[in-house]
Length: 270
Image (cartoon, rainbow, N blue to C red):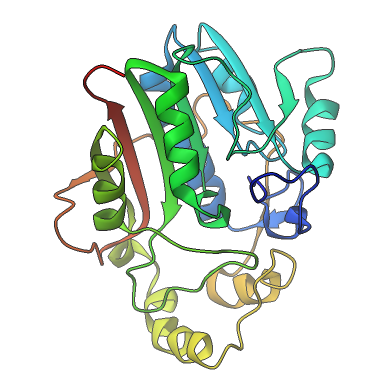
C-alpha cells in the first residue's frame, strides 16, 4: 500500500518490494492485521463517499465497496494498480494519483483511508492538507501505521518519516482535525519465541542487518513465526474475530502495541 513523492508522474521506487502482495507467503499475524484494519474502517464507511489512498494491490477494496455508498481508490505505483485492476476487472473505482495532490473536488468526500503508507510520504503534511480540502465537515481520515515507538522497531525500505501516537495527534490538531489514536496487536500477546527474540531483533536493527523488503524478510518470518500462510486475494467477512483497537491518550508514546490507528475528524468550517 504505497504512494510516491509529490509532483512525480512515476514512482521513484519499486513499491511492490515493500507491499503485502496477494499470493505472497506471510505470517498469520499479517493476514489478521490486514483484515482488522478494513473491519475497523468499515464502521466509518457505511453509506459514505470513500477514498482509499495508496491502495496497493487492492485486497480490501471489494470489502469496502460493499459497505460504502461510493468508493474510489488509487496508488502511485502502476505495477500495484495493474494487480488491483486484474483483480477487479471492469469495476471502475481505480485510478492512478499522487497522495500529495489528490485529484478530487473540495468537500467531495466523507472518508479518506491511508493504511501503512504515511511513512513513504514527503512531506506528510501536504497529504494532510489535501485531506482537509477534499473532506466535508465532519469527514474523517483513517490512518494505520507501524508503531515507531517500540524499542525494536525496524523501518521499511523507502520510508521517510514515521509518526507515533503523539506525533499523529499533534500533526492533525495543527491542521484542523480532532484525532483519536488507538493501539492494535499488543506486544505481550506474541508467542514466547517472538518475545524472546525481540532483544536480538533490536541488536540486528542497530547493526542494520535486518532485511527491509517483503521477500528479504521471508526467512526471518519463518524463524520467528514458524510456518507461513498465503496472503488472500481479497478481504472478506469472518476472516478474524474482530475486537476494536485499544484507545490511547495520545499524550505519551505508546510502547504496548505493534500498530497505531488514528481517526482524524475535520472540525470547524473550512
